[in-house]
Image 1: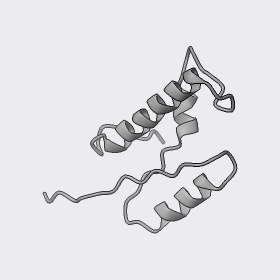
Image 2 (image 1 turned 45 degrees about the vertical axis):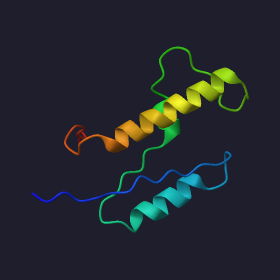
Image 3 (image 1 turned 90 degrees about the vertical axis):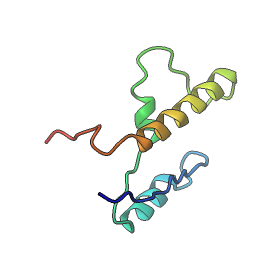
Image 4 (image 1 turned 180 degrees about the horizontal axis):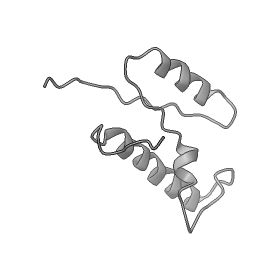
Length: 85
């Protein structure tokens, strides 16, 4: 089995600037790609959620943790997660 190298690409910016549109377009032009949306990971927070539209230290800390969680998901071995159909 050969190991392929990959790239982790992060698109950042304010709400509504087209990050998801750009990410979908980028992914559609790759042989293999995963689009992990930070907002979907944010929805997994059960307790302690902070409004990302409000600026403050709690929001900054939570944003950094969410980015790390998205990176961890992207770096997970391909067979770790399965999609139910």
